[in-house]
Amino acid sequence: MYTIKTLNAISPVGLAKLNNKQFEVAVDTDAPDGILVRSADMLNTAFNDNLLAIARAGAGVNNIPLDRCSEQGIVVFNTPGANANAVAELVIGMLIAGSRNVAVAAQWCQGLTGDPAMAKTVEKGKKQFVGNEIKGKTLGVIGLGAIGSRVANCAIELGMEVYGYDPYISIDAAWNLSSQVHHCVNLNDMLPLCDYITIHVPYLPTTKDTINTQTLALCKDGVKILNYARGELVNTEALLEAMETGKVSGYMTDFPSEAILGKPGIVCTPHLGASTPEAEDNCAVMAAKELSDYLKNGNIIHSVNMPEVNQPRAGGKRICIIHKNEPGMISQITALTTEAGLNIENMVNKSKKNMAYTMLDATGAVDKKLAEKLAAIPAVIRVRIL
Image (cartoon, rainbow, N blue to C red; front, side):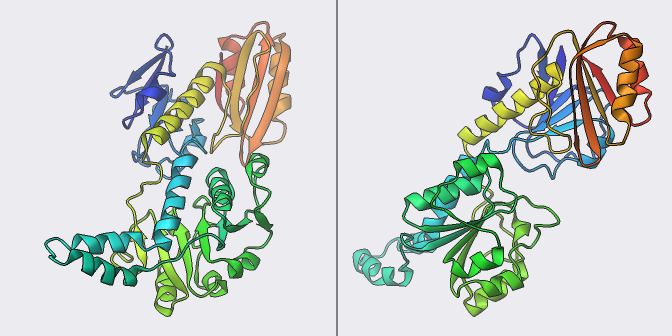
């Protein structure tokens, strides 16, 4: 029986994927085997020695101390793509709303209460909110992952000309992308073509301030920018300067800040991207399945700090070893399995930066004594026998 601790309210649809004969889900437990989390801050959380995995029901993991987890052999999962449809729908909605000045027009209407000549006031006042249609306009999509590709495909269906930039596009994303999306190999070549730009990349040191003074200078005058990925991807000072000069005519974002609130042409929503019951269910289901599969079978799918290893069982017992990515590790591991007289039915080893994971299905004397010997290898961080 594995104990799973929840740090936030997790969708019951997801929790139902944890068989109650194999998993005990609790809010208050001091030594869980796994943790399910959404937005709770874990950066200063002390982890018990038997904690094996943390599953984040969402994509971002900036609330989890990844380096410390790796050092302790704790696998951290996220759920890429589970909330993609929710975010993509919001982006398309705001693309249209921003083009038609819906937010400011709706707010203006609220001030008409009690106006005896409301019909005339409406007809006279609507001129100040005239917008434009998006059909025939050009959209640039930075990042063509699960969300970006959905946005691009939907914009194509709405009659837009779409350009996409993603130097790291995955094979799956490429297959799902409409053939009508023009793929740009250089961001600087794409920016001058676009009436609208939407950004869908993870927040990393290399992506911080992707939209900055230099990139904005390449854009069309009057470009509109959408940011429903991370606030830090757009340099606030550069954005505000560009809006003052008219280089940028509108900014729609899910990340309000003191600097941009109340500024003309800027529409902020309160991080609504994944705030739908459907997205919460999808994220919880994926997180629960990832956690369950790892705890029961040792498979690692969608981990942000460990390599992906997913193999069907080949018989016998399964040995799972998290270790540093150092030369000679396989020979040290197999030397001990040979000494124990094991027959290896299946073996896989993969690495991710400085971390590695070796998984063996073996028959023979796979016991606690062998686990202790494997754990004694200096570069080994954690050994499990399933």
